[in-house]
Length: 72
Image (cartoon, rainbow, N blue to C red; front, side):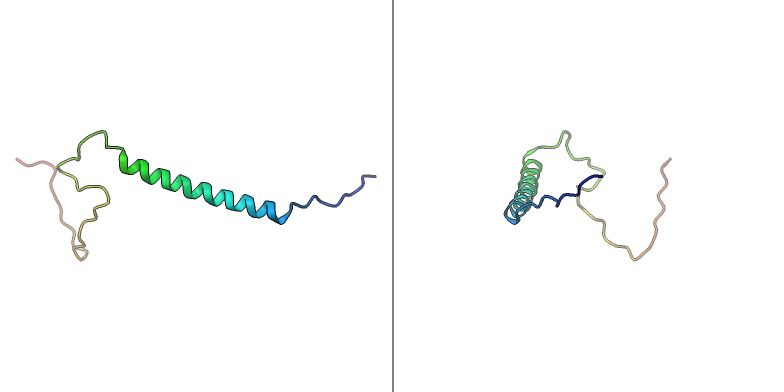
């Protein structure tokens, strides 16, 4: 019959250090992503017929305006 051993316990200091390391790595990666997104220029100039990224159109109170694709 197999003997059951007491499970190995990890010291609290090690657990705390692992959590702190994980938090620091998350923060460093977020900072790096922010810096890269600020310094990298887009591959193409902005399109004149579209609003810039992050721009939201004003609310028109639920009114829908139909626009025809073909104009003669």
